Length: 629
Image (cartoon, rainbow, N blue to C red):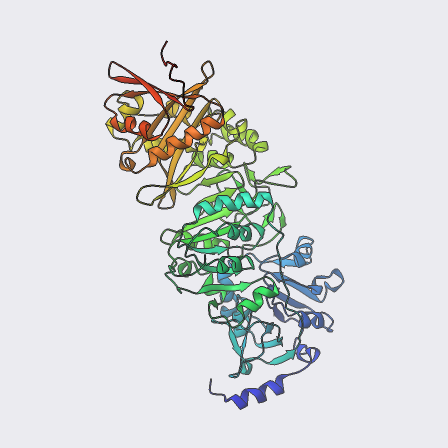
């Protein structure tokens, strides 16, 4: 652009007109774009709907604030068409007074550019021009910038309260047809404080996020709550379509550095933000933030260039095969496709990436399950069963990618609300999704004791997650068994077992957590869980002792996993009032015998025919006590 500083100021003066004067350019049959989210130009909108206009189509994505053009009495004059249904337009869409166009956020700009959806007039809100004549789109660049670039006419509300954001976020005064000065507070957006339910979901998600990951959080309370559970992480990066105030806490604590980002390192890349004035003041002229249009930020190929990309998006409903509905309740459209699948697919293609779907297990005060045998009639699939990787509720984590329908159904039932598991299990059996002999009690009656979950580290610093076993772990334990050496199998089973089929394996993963307890040591390998150690006990109520067994994968032996598992299960047994453990250990299993010495608990042992009969006491015994009488 070769205009001088003087030229743009002269242009500004010429184009600076009242809102009503600027809006006279709109003609019947025009398509008018309205700026997004908290940057929706409220002064222009209020004036616009009072103009004597007819047959005008209005297009936008999520908008906050007023939407008077959706009022029933204006139905012959205005027709809104939204790419994402916000609360201010939801009723109009559901009652047929407005339209919803499902489309990926990354592809909307192409609708404008190609002429498939030409924009006649774009109504946007900008910060005042800098000394070179460039106005920033501020907190919403998203599809607003491309709409302004491809529109025949641009009307900009110039608001000195709009923060000046950096990046690919500018429009020059010379490219604006009318400038309407309208100072008013920029809309703010807050989410309710996290409930106990959202905290449980967030805690589960935090388990999946590794240090050095680049994160994306979708729109809504749950994804935002997740951020507060990442305070213990290190060197996180951000590449997201939207962010809010919760990001500030992570920045303040030094959790977000962007040091390990492989694309735009040390930059927070976003398309728009929604939050408080405090957030807006923080991002004003802040070079840490780089705002870019959604067709760049949401491009799955761009997203995938961030190694260890973690995408966290919410859903309304998911069926037992993994199909996700995120935009409707049955026939009633509720939100939109947005950028969910853009980021799910981008994260899936990222090196070490982890796509995550989060949802509460129920809705309507626990009267309806969000995990269902089949999607509600009328509900559409936003994320296909082939795209889903992690699904997280307050009851746990299900990993579905590459899993069979049987494995998926069982995993999803295990993280459904207990009130609905029996019915889900019945239908899954009826449709032959799962084994017909799948025991009900471990899923329906037993409470998964999440309080026994803990993190530990191996001697070389590798993080290992110790947790109680679940019915959905059958395939994981099967994989672990077939990775044991012949010798390890013999030490564990006192037999050279060659196979561990379902009929035998099911009893190991379906337990009641009272008369029997089993812990698994789990690591993440290429984004999926792998069991590297198992420790279990079965209670003998006649003696109040429990027989225990421990097995560690050969490639993980000698790294401290066995000690961590044994100490953890002893701690549980003590809390449950058990007096000790019994075990049978082969004489040549020297590693296990040394491990008993490291526990610090007194024990007696007696050898017979090459096998030690061992009794471990949790409380120090009197010298006169005898093990065998």
